[in-house]
Image (cartoon, rainbow, N blue to C red; front, side):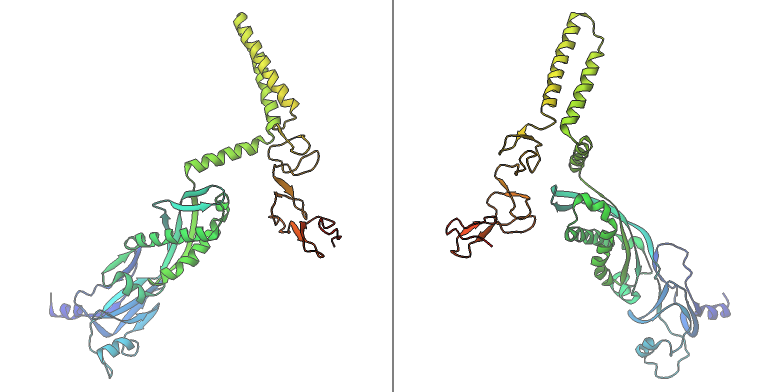
Length: 369
């Protein structure tokens, strides 16, 4: 190598980074002992920031643009170097290019189930997964807190920590939202927005910004899914009495079409037919009802009926109607859980306690207002 090649390689005239990767966050400018010449051209492209570090201390941060390096646009480095006057000699500094673009389609998922208390199913275990995107918001903080002085840094170096924070924040959002498990699927967007609000302060401490978080799926334990399937089947069946009648009629038809030969076969078919006929008769005689009777008038009614279809009185034993809205409440309750009305009142004359719907005081006979 000639003397001119050595002199040319001794000083750097152009400082830039052409990013050819998709996941590099920080790249250190390869100086290899070269010195930076005052007046050199610094090119910072869109979605980049250039950080100058002098002897381990952050000096200046350059945003996108083209710069001619001088003591005027290196104010912090000028102060650190104690350059009181114009300075045109070469100087040494580490230059880090930070990628400030969004890193999208990053996947996250729960390593362990999230334990959640639900009003319908009690304590359940949930698993979830989705995608998120982030970016470097403050290059100086990111340099101090995360990558230090390593020559390069990519998304794989920080994804483990970010995923841990995401799962923690999502668990907080799920707990605070109080969304029933049956309604979680229709609230994926809301959960993502709330998780971003919860997590953003944590990302800011690292010089990062959580741009978006999407919940793609929240899965339930197998035993809970089986319960949901049973509830769905019951909803499809509808009226149990009518369904029993239909099933009995279908079974009798199948027995009649049975081509069993001999007396034994005929006897079996006849016995099955008699049994099925009795079952159908019982189902029809009950009118599709469950066999539960009204405690007031004795009429047949549905098992889950709140009022008797014959007398209109509350169906449950130990249940009475609210004096205001008529909804069924526990007997002896002081307030209605539906409308909040008090079930007791006080006589304005003698102060005796009486039922909320009483027209006269049972103690002094005074008419209520």
